[in-house]
Each structure stands twice: as structure tokens, then as C-alpha cells.
Length: 400
Image (cartoon, rainbow, N blue to C red; front, top):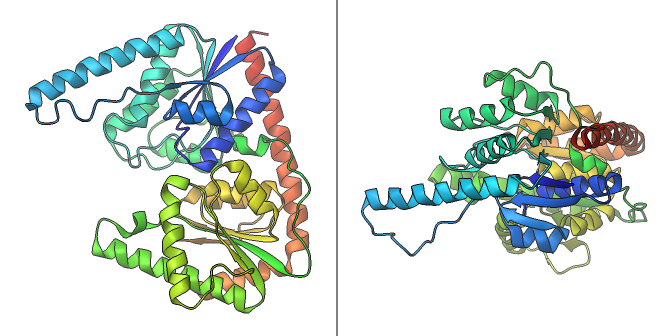
């Protein structure tokens, strides 16, 4: 039996990679003889990282050829490329039993062009159904959907699915507002909650340790003078908070969640900290970046408390039993924090208030023991619910 896992994998987003790893682990555990393949953004990276066969979700148009050609000729070449890509999708789906849209915040058109992820999702979903494959949307997240054509592609793919579930009520509500009825679709937690149980925490000891997550806020200030000013203010507040932590005898570990986007922020943050007199090579500060979700988990395991922005930085910290303050760029973070009993410990990046962040952090530390119990209870409940979902999915795909 061959099962395909579709998603924006291989792009150095560590949250996406941990979601794919969770799906692979749970499917292999239940159907050890199943052949898993990934339909993804970068097949070479996925094959090396996860050890499964991977194929590209979309063909890549040669950059050099025809760049100065007349517009009709470029359109003709693009049409030929798309026809060939549809035929390739049909060849791949002819050989699979099921296509799983595997978690992540995949249902969005943010940053996508006309032929971006929503279009590819529609193409592969339709190709799968034309061959009689099972099509399942598994704990998917929904973010902004603003373009009518993208909305058509996403709703069309969802409409022909055999199974749909969303990772939170927030995602279901966004789709409902986009005109797709989600009232009969279940809610199941993000798939990363089904990762193998992490080892006992390495944190603790005399010196208190804090992880501070970063995010490419306002696309690192590109696009306008206003974006540059907002990004600079974000870096200044982050620097001030880190320096406050160090002055109060905490050690600081900076963490990223997307190597492709956050590495520039890390470099900018380091430069600002150095300009304000911090020895970034000192024993109380560390910021070497993780290049895999396993490395990120190992970094988070060494701290006691976490301040994070990226969704899966928050989630992986919670998976490890760490109390978290979320400084978020999307309402999905607040939905997760409320579900985990930490709704009081949220801010938005746009409204980031340094004094309030310090107050939230101190309150988090004061109540850490009780919060760890709440987080552990909710994490166990999420893991149990996902066990039931995987069992149901495997039964559906296997026809048992």
C-alpha cells in the first residue's frame, strides 16, 4: 500500500518538518509495510531529512530560457509546462491508495501567486480523486485567504475530500467565513502533538534558563519605510527584553523556527545586542540556529521557560512541558494557548508591550509548577485524541 503525504515540506520551516515527521512515525507504526512518499516543495531535502521517496508538487520553469521572449510565447511555454505537470500528477496518483494533506497551516494564500500552493493543492487533490484515491485533510490549519481564485482552489479541494478535520476552532471558523461549511467536520489537535514522547527535560539547576523565539516580523522591514521602522522597533524591544533577562541573572537561548526566514533576524538581533554592549559569546547567551526540528527540541529541552512567536516553537515547548508566553503574528497562536490553558500569556507582535511582557514572564515563572501540570494534562489529552484519529485514518485507507 502506497500513501502520499502532501505539504509545503523541505523549505527549512522546522514546524512543517516536525508535522511531517509525526505523520510518518504514526503511519509506519500502524502500517509498517506501507510505502510512504511525500509530495512536497523540495524533494531532495525531504528525502534526506525523512528517509522517504519524495516528488515535487510543481514543475520548475527554467529561469534563463525565454526570459526576454514575447509574452504570448512565455504564456505558451507556461501552458505546456502546466499540462506536463498535470500529467505527472496523474501518473503519481495512479500508484497511490491515499493522498493525505498532512497538517500545517496549508490552507492560505498568504505570499502565494496565482499558481501557488492553493493551485497545487487543487491539482493534486483532483488528480487523486480521478484515480479513486482517498483524499484526507488531516488536522490542517487555516490562515488568511484573500484572493477569490485561491479561495476557489481551496474550497474545491476540500469539497471533494473523503475526510476533513482542522487543528483548531479558529481554522474552522476562518473557512466558515470564507464560505465553506465546516459544521460537520471534526477538530483534532496539530499533528506535532503525536511526535514520540520526548525524553525527560534537561532543564533545572541553580541558574534559570529562558528561550526567546524570533520571527521575520514585517519581512525584516522590507517593502516600505513603515515596515522598516516597525521591524527596528521589534528588534529594539526584543533586545531590551533579553538584556533585562541577563541583568536579572537568567541565561538566554535564542531559538528560530524557520531557517530560511529567521536566520536574517538572528543576525540582526545579534548585531543590535553587540551594539548595546552584550558579549554574545558569553556563557549566559546562546543563539546558534537549529537546522532541524530535532535540534530545536534539544535546545528547548535545556530551558525552563519559553517566549516564542512561531506556532510550532510554542507547540514544541508545550510538548516538552515548558510554560510559554506567546508573542504571536497570527490568531492561531492564541487558539493553541487557550486550548492549553495559557490564554492569559499572550500578546501580538503588532501590539508588543515590553513592560507587559516582563510582567507576563514574571507571572509565568511564579505559577510555573501549576502551569506545567495543566500543560502536561492537555498534552496527554491531545496525544490520545490523535491516536484515535490515526487509527480511524488507517482503517479508512485500508478499507477495514
